[in-house]
Image (cartoon, rainbow, N blue to C red; front, side, top):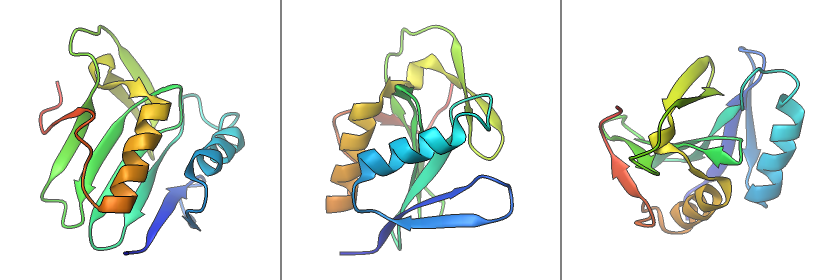
Length: 132
């Protein structure tokens, strides 16, 4: 199995990498640590060396964005294509994401855990290359 870890930066300079041992609780701890610092839910990456990364926002309704290791493939999980509005996340900068791409945090964790185990993106959601 390839090395998988959590990667994020709070201060803009010092990259933090954490080995994954209990993803759900680790992400909730980071959420607690960052919720008073940023005006929007904090986002971070789950990385599998040689495979790619999935960015996730630390909110009850979240987004998942996948990038292959070579950045040739970039996909976003699709939630409800009929959803209206946008939600702001902090992924190194404040970013508005269409609510069409929101999924539940629990589903996001399930998808990431499956990806870490198998190295393949889950079909529990549709993935798209196009951001509307």
